[in-house]
Length: 189
Image (cartoon, rainbow, N blue to C red):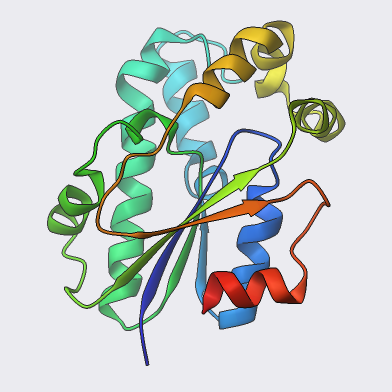
C-alpha cells in the first residue's frame, strides 16, 4: 500500500477543509487541520504576550514566533502518522513557505518522514468574490483583518506561487463548493 502525504493548500475561504476531509474520508487517511491542532496553544501564546488572541494576520509576535511553531507541530504529527504507515492529509494554507523550493525536503528530514512517502500538493482555487463570501459566512473573529483589508489580503493570496519540488502538484477548482467523485479520483490516483 502506498503511503501518501497530501498538502491541501489555498487561501482562507477556498474550501481547503471541505476538500481535505473528503480526501481523508475517501482514502481513510489521518486528517490534520492546523486550526484544530494549534488554535488553543496559539491563542494562549498570543494572550500571554499581551496580544489579541484573534489577531494573527497583523500580529508581529504571531508572525515571528507562533506561526512557525504551528507548522512545525503539524509536520511533526504528520511524521508520527507516516512512520506508522498511515497516509495523511494536511489542511493548512502554508503560504509563508511557498517560495522555499526545498521546503518538503527539509520537512521530510527534520520530521523523519519515510523515504517512500508520495507527496501530493493539492492547490485549491476559487474566485475572489466566492472566497470573500465564504470568509464572511464562516464568521471567525480571526478573519477581521482579512475582511477589513480584503484587497491587500486577496492580492497577496493570488500572488503566492508554490515552488515546492519533490511532490506531485494538482490543481483543484473548488468554485462549485466541493469535490465530485471524478475530481477526487484524479486527486487520489
